[in-house]
Image (cartoon, rainbow, N blue to C red; front, side, top):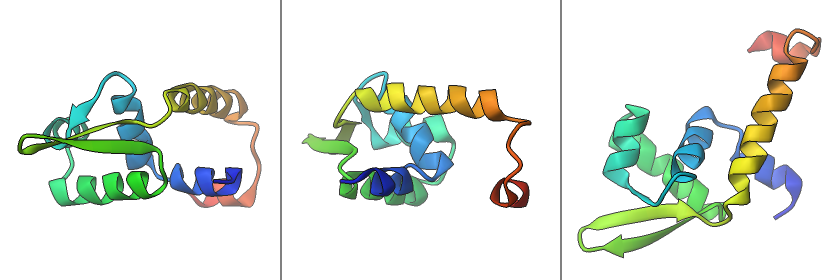
Length: 100
């Protein structure tokens, strides 16, 4: 995967929240849904996208599907991105940021 594709996979707040939550431990769908306070179908859609991107792996545990990060360094990347975003907040003057 190239960097552009990686950032497209990360270009959604819900997916980033899922990854950060999974950074703490392997979780089942129910736990992720409860943490996000989102509909299960929407959460499952984002989990599918994260699997397709290769950012999470899943395994069956009885009736539950368990998810975990493929690479724990994703948490470092996300936290660094949050830090940088906070640093440049107020400095950024690009048109795309003004539209959000």
